[in-house]
Amino acid sequence: MKNFDNRWKDFPDYIIGITKEIWEDRGIGTLNHYYSEDIPVRSPMGVQRGNQEVIASTMATVDEFADRQLFGEDVIWSGTPETQLLSSHRIITTATHNRDGMFGKASGKKFKIRVIADCAAKDNTIFDEWLIRDYGGIVRQLGGDPKSFAKKLIKKEGGPDKCNKPFTPEIDIKGDYVGTGNDNEWGAQYASVLTRLMDKEFSLVREKYDRAVQTEYAGAVSGISHDSVIEHWLALRSSFPNATFKIHHQIGMDANVLPPRAAIRWSLDGVHEGWGMFGKPTGAKVHVMGLAHAEYGPFGEDGSSIRRECALIDEIAIWKQILMQTGKFS
Image 1 (cartoon, rainbow, N blue to C red):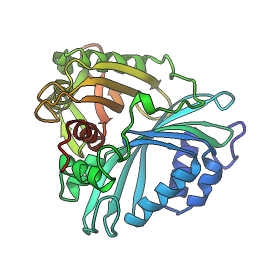
Image 2 (image 1 turned 45 degrees about the vertical axis):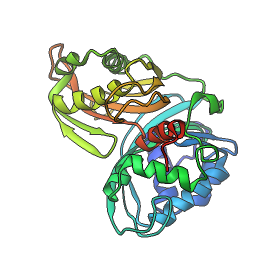
Image 3 (image 1 turned 180 degrees about the vertical axis):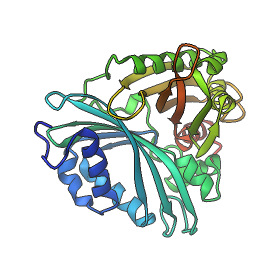
């Protein structure tokens, strides 16, 4: 890869390799050169600016979860080393809650969640990032629930006026990545499926998803078959029935020895005005950041269907937005 360290055989090797080096090998200081000085890192919980903020939060996470491991499931990517590269990196992460920290007093409990990180890179450096960790999945496996945890977090951070603000377009920082992905057919297919689901065409699940589809959703929820797909997307959409759905980035791949697959970064902007994943409607204005991966197989009415899907949102960040506006956080 042009202008990358020659120890990396390709872009996925670079992404998986530096992730292990930073987190598991405790090479936290390498963020001084793997991440640019002014990198914006957006997650549903807010925006960080610069590698020093990333280093501080990484140290805090490593301290709270000392045995944390990150297993790279896939890297779906687009671009070129000569211009800009964008990786959508799906990770299984495991850890034991052995120290006090963001998630409260050490509980000794273990968790396993998914993470998806979209990282833009050039010249051996990550310079733009979008990241979703399944915080709701962590909270549930540590014995709590997302709504109660969000309430405690608001109080701990000083109340709705002073607490850290979840990500919305209004607080976004413009980064240097200018791409929108590629025009590969698999990305286009998956983008069409998500768009139609957000248009309430839930009947298409039995057409576009394999009967044996394996699913991984927010809250560390694993499922199989059509009902798991419908339950997830219906519960989300019914909470925000009139929210605007937008696709921000779209990648399709059909390469190496892996099946055709796709990665989509998307959002919902609207009002919590329906019963669904987030309970009784509150009228709160909410921004939902979403990252989703799909893998295709040979079965289906048109010769292919989605065999695996992993779609992440951050329930804690969404509850935080709702509670900050309704005042019901105490």
